[in-house]
Structures are given as structure tokens and as C-alpha cells.
Image (cartoon, rainbow, N blue to C red; front, side):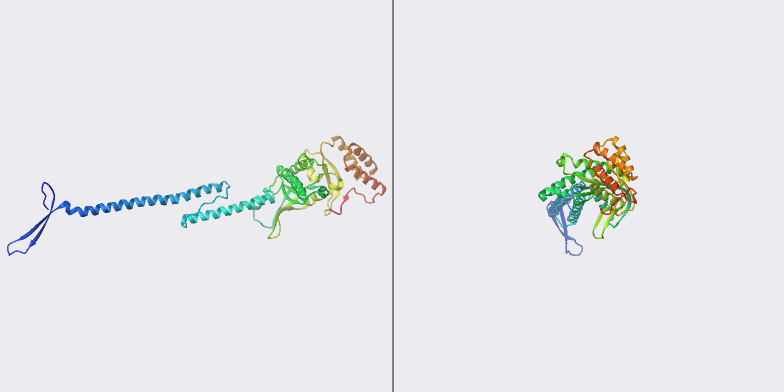
Length: 395
């Protein structure tokens, strides 16, 4: 290779055949720049190809990143919506790859959660929220547990006559209005509505959430229910009244029914007694009756004893009581109890005198005319085996 001052040359020596002892060759010269021009063009082309490939790769990475990040951001937002209770949130599925499969799985999960929430919401309307939570978070199996509780029955009086001449929709509206207010009273005092039975309500205090003061809570609810029946919210209708029966004692709470259809409820003596006492309010012409256990567990509430009874289906004798309002003066409690003691002791004539005084003092009270009628019958035909217990053979 030779070089001059102007350019670099590329020299190629080609040997020729020569006589012995001689060496002959041809020297070919060319510009090095011209000789390297194809290589430089190839190198430049390869550079362009590499740069284009790199740019295409970067562009593909950006597009791929956006195609991945967009659904992932949407998926993240939807997960936050689900956590906030917005179960209707869905993620659009725009591909069949792993991301698309993830979005489909998320939508299926959201659909399942939405249906579960709908069931929970409907369940909370069919039963109380507390019972709904108990059912959702426990094994749905037949059986129950014993628990001390208080049971309240509330029945609308003369509902058939109230409905007479009215359209069924109006009757249902009036009943739903009362049930709405009554249910709110029960729940406000820590109880739960176990079931609606026609125009009656059965409520529990102390189950499914156990409380030590269930009898006091139930008593507050009873007094408020009694006032609510005559409140302006219901129009203050003098013909609209309720009968309330309540008992405190041991009951078995849990899932009752069959393997295919369960009902969370309570059974036991306290339930039967509360139902019987509600029925007896009609016979004794009072608005409410409670058991002795409820009376003893409700300090601060005034009561008057109504009778000593043996209800249908029970062998135990129960002293039953009526919670009093401000219309019954404290000074009347002494002659009332004296009259009852004389009545139980078969001294019906003196008991009759006290009951008459009380009837005159409380002309609107329908209980004392009943006791006066009893005394008249007993004086006219004294029973040979009198023990002061009123026994009932029907509900």
C-alpha cells in the first residue's frame, strides 16, 4: 500500500511468469477511498437498519406498555370501587391474552359479589340486619343454643273491623306504616324483629346479639310501642290499639325448619308465655301484660299485678303484671294490691269494696269492672277448691 500527499492508494502486485532468475510483476493502483466506498455504504445501511429497528422496538415497547398499563389502571380503580362497596364496577375486556383473562376473572368476581350483596340486602329486609349477619357468618345448620332472653309479641287490636269497608291497598298501607314505626322502635332499643305474623310482630331481645339488660330494653320498647299506637303519626285513631305480651326466660335460638329451608327463630317457655300473655290482654281488658321475671328485671318501671294464672300448656303458675303509665297514681297501688290479696284469699266481699273504689277513681280503666264481675260470681257460687289461680284451657 502506497500513500502520497493527496490521497491514499491501494496497490496490488500480481506476479507474472518470467525466465529463470528473473521476477516480473504487475502493480495495480486504486484509490483507497473508492475501494472502501461499498463497505462504508453497507455500514451506513446497517446503521440505518439498526436505528430503525431500535426505534421500532422503543415504539413497540411504548405501545405495549400503554396496552398493559391502561387495563391495569382500570383494574386498579375498579378494585378500589369494589372495596368501597360499588359492586357494579366492571373492567372492559379488549384482548384474549393474560391481561384479558385477568379482566374477565375480575368481572366474574365483581358479579358474584354484587349478587351476594343483593342477597344480603334482600335478606336484611326479610329479617333483621342482626339476624342476616348471623346467618351470613355462621354455618347454616339445623340446631340452636340456649340463651336468656326476652320475647315480645305485639298484635293490632280489632284489625278486621278496622279494615271493614276499606280497600285492601289502604289496609296494607296502614299496617305497613305501623310495622315500619314499630320495627324502628324495636331496633332502636336493641331488639330484632323475628317475624311478622299477619297483623302481629314477634321481637327478640338478647338474641342473636347477647345483652345482659335485654329485659330493660324490651320494656322500653313495649312502653314506646304502646304510645306509638295512639300517636299522631298513625292519625291518633282511637280505634287503633295494640296488645302487648312479654316474657323473660330461657329460650333456644338458632336455625329451625328443614334441611332445605331454614328459619332463624327462638323456641321455649318464654316464647309460649309471651304469646299467651298477649292473648290474655283481651280478656283482662288491658293493653299489655308481662311475666314476673320481666317485671323483676325492669327496675324503674311501675307495675300492678293483674292476676295469678296458669296458661294453656303450662303447669307453672305465673303472676302477671301490667306496666303502668302516669294516669295510674302511686296512691292507688296500695288498695289495688290489698284488693288482689283479699281476692286470692277468698275474701271476695271486701275485695269487691276495694275494686269498686278503684273503679270510681279510674272510670276509664276496664280491668276493675271485670274483677267486680268475678267477685259477684264467686259470692253467688263459691268454688269448693278455691286457690286463687285462674286456669286457661285455650289460647
